[in-house]
Image (tube, rainbow, N blue to C red):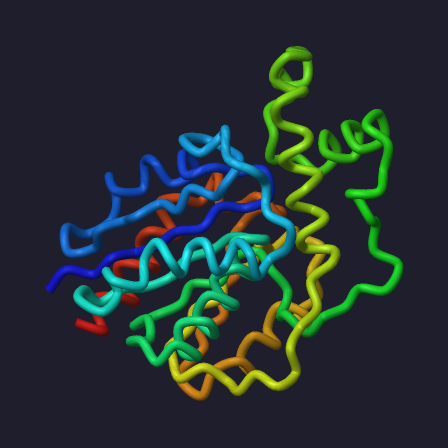
Length: 235
C-alpha cells in the first residue's frame, strides 16, 4: 500500500529541502514536498499573512487526494507547527486523518518563550547577522547580495508567522500516532519538546538525534529510517 508523505519545510525553506529523501525512503512511501507560497516554484506568489493562511493553502491543495490515498505529515520547525495545525484543519473538515505525524525540531504549540528574540522586528543588518549565527544557511550565501535580497524577506516573514502564532486551547488531542524528532544540541528544553505527547491520544515516540536546530540537514539517513520503520508498522 502506498502512503503519501507531505513534507513541510522550515522557515525560509522550500520543497528542495526534501529533494533527496526519496533515495532513502522505502518504495511504498511517496514523498510529496510541500511548496509554500512565495518561494521555489511559487516564488511569484504572495507571502502568507499568518500560519492559518498557510494551512488553508496546503489543505486546499491536498484535500481531494487525502480522501483517496493514505498519508502522513512531516514538518521541521515552522513546518512542524504547520503540520500540526493542518492535522487539526483536516479533522475539522471531517476528512481522513494522517496515519502518522512526524514533528521535527519544534517545541509543543502551547510553549510561549517569554523574552525570545523577535527576529521579524529586527533591522536587516541585525537580522542578517542573527540568521548567520543560527546556522542552517550556507555562509557563502551571504556574500551574494542579489540572493539575500530575495531570501531575507521570505525568511523574515516566516519568522513573523511563527512569532505571531497563538495556540488554540479549544483543540482536542489528535487521534494519530506521532513521532517527535529533536536535536541533542538544540536550545529546546526536554519539557518543551516532549510535551508533544499531550497532543495525541495515540503513541508518541520522542527521539533525540545528533546536532543542533538544523539536524535535519545532517541526519537524513537516520530520519528517513525512522520514517520507514514508523510507516511500515501502519501498513
